[in-house]
Image (cartoon, rainbow, N blue to C red; front, side):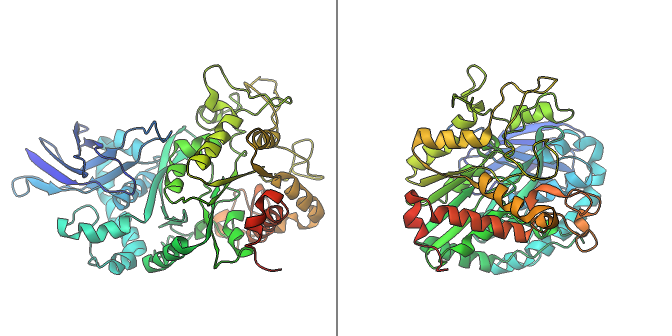
Length: 496
């Protein structure tokens, strides 16, 4: 008989949470935390163990709950019949890294197959711990924790100091497009910038907590904050994928930084529906205060509504897709599923803005570099529309950018037509220059892009490198400046 106990901790986590334990024989055990996050279980378990804490689905937040994992190598037996196993964002990252190294999408699949791979887990755990200390050693020291601090097995006296680190990290699991299941874990700081992502050489960037603290002071003191909801075209990126850059990373430079701060919460691969279901908006609105501007730019992944598409089509329809309005501006969705209407999905954010006294602004999505035939080429035309195909894979078809405009009109909110602005931009650049703005880079200089989309031979027609992100952010800033309903925000721009 073995007793395990510990503390579950993560920002915004609601207790009690369900605890699921799998041992080396594949046996499963369950318990629950108390309302402070502590748990204890005595059972006949054979190490090593993998443990998951699962928050319930949050119906009032319209999103899934937070999930955290931890791995324990062992040490049970006659000498050790009690073991401390804590769960937190850092233990979750360790398990996720092991899962990916074993070829699983993420922790969910590792737990399912743990009995068959537990020996490999024990070997990989040492490597993942090395990555952990490479990335977090400075942050641990900055809060006063010892250099050999173990986020799984630590004495309770360290909890207050450790909470200083845990409480400035968002933890979430990605969407695995190949299976439609949750995938690997992503950690971000409070401003949604990815942390602890190894670069192309396997080095983990150092996480500087003191720099983040200084940024938080600035956020708290800013007269106005711009909160950005969006997808990969706007997102912030880790150095691994440099020079890929989202326009949201560049937006703040157009404003007086003594008055305005941009919180770029855009996330790659998300649709208006999955962004909230996966919990990203739950995190963002915890930072919101009355008077903040909420910029909402979705569409690229809402369009993934073709169920006949080989491979991921069915999964994307189930998890990402929403349907655009008719040409007569009528919402389209299956009976009794209004959440599958793109307008309905956008209106979720408008309703949240009203609730939190935010100022919402809708943006049409940025253009893809595609011509009228849907091929890479010129002239680039409006392309955020779906049409029925031979397999009849779309339940409903229509124009996503027009639906953004319909929603703005229906709800009397400002709209910025960024699709049209980026079409004008790319057509001005033409064949000779567009690849300097969109992602088409030398794989010798940027080895991450060797033989993948984004290299010179396989240009990315959707995403930007630094020059393009800068140009698009300028288009957004100009659109704000010229919109009569946003005159107060435009007055906070830098003088030209």
